[in-house]
Image (cartoon, rainbow, N blue to C red; front, side, top):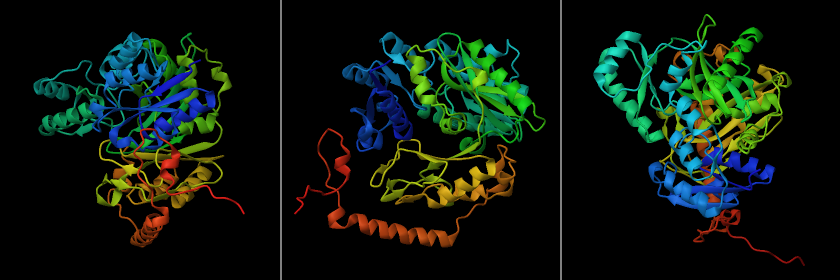
Length: 499
């Protein structure tokens, strides 16, 4: 087993990996950009190394600086989290070349499945249903126009080198295609350092169903069931749940078997997800493989009892899976809401600034994976996800009610978040009945407005919190030290004598 792991990421996923390392007795190393110096993952890690300025290409996407940091601290392995370099086969290959274990698939397997076009081409040789689309990457607009005409509008533009909704666009006619491709390329380049995009047929009113898989280096593969990820805004998942209300035991068995077949056909190892679209007639189509831990992995952990991050580390270290497919079963229901630093009342524009006060919800079945704290700053440079709120119940309605209450209890003051928006989703009749397709937001919440009464209350609470935390006795003293300690954010304090 590894003695030291470097986490090449930030925010809540870096915190999640650090916690797994702690439980396994492994020392953790955080990397950070200059604007992330006071971030939670930096404070929680055993060691921390600054790798550059704020722009991702100067820090979290800079392979040389991350590799140099790993060598400097003597890390045996690198965990990439999700996003940034997590699905970059060149980075995986670089780690292999430098003698550092990449906690994920091999560079060869990642190049295949991480490139959405290449994986589609490979799997077309197997008995895997695939959405019609391009099987090669091109650059000239004329070829895109010909391919779009062949596939038939509407088409979906997708980034070849990554996921998470980055670079995705729906195009309904040829006039929109050129500008949409240019926008998709810019977004893909910014997110993944690769501007390659491709086209596939846009299936109307589908459900987005993904299967969690684990594959070790010794040939064993299991799936840990499905997650429903259909509630999306601008192709970005915002709410996930498991089990899916659309998947019955027979369909689950077929989709799970196909997911395992995809993993074996591509030589994939470690944790990942096989993504499908499910049409209204219950036909499913392979979408892509996400070669990393997913944002929504906690809901699978809640219903199976697995620790997926620990299994990533164990598999990368060479351990065999001790889980058989027949050993896995689903217990209860789990829902996850992604908490973003966005203003839902103002076109979901990013909300930047200082979090003056926050309080996580508590209660039976509630879990919070967070990368924030009272007093931390939210910058403009990175994905706006702050935290993930997870609710478990013995059935779906119990989980939904717990999530609704937890969102009501979740306090984040100083910036705008999507919490009030997510709370309203929980009460939409179609969500309550499990009728969730990828056009759910468009059909149910396109004209959403926040309750003014709640806004006034939040403003009053924010003002009170700001006043309390800016009183002289609570004001923090800025630290000029290069080391990172939780004591630096507690404000003025002293050890007193008891009389």
